Amino acid sequence: MNNNKTRPKHLNLFKIRMPVTAVASIAHRVSGVLLVMLIPVVVYLLQRSLHSEQSYDALMQLLTHPLAKMLLIIGIWAISHHFFAGIRFLLIDVDIGILKASARRSAWLVHALALICALWGVGIVL
Image (cartoon, rainbow, N blue to C red; front, side, top):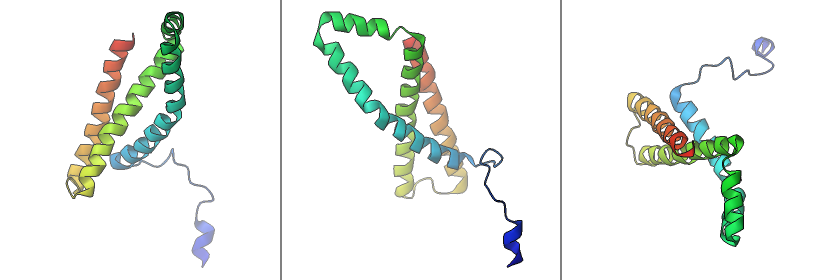
């Protein structure tokens, strides 16, 4: 019972080195939350763009702002990471890639593909 006194009072997640598979899982959840939060924004922007030619031009002008470009790049990363991680988890559900080495490779592949898509988005947005 004395072991409880030596346990830490709090868990500092920044000091823990998580495996790449855990990072992929957490990023999948974060990207899913971001996508859900972006749904009303995307619907509003679509509605504004379809309202009139003037509102479309105003929206295009708004999207040239650096903050809007950064949000677009984050959105591209979120949708691409969620897509590729979702495929990875579906394959794991059918027992493909469940070994430790292949799970690590697939997690690194998800991160790389999401980064490539985000960089591709930078080229489109800028």
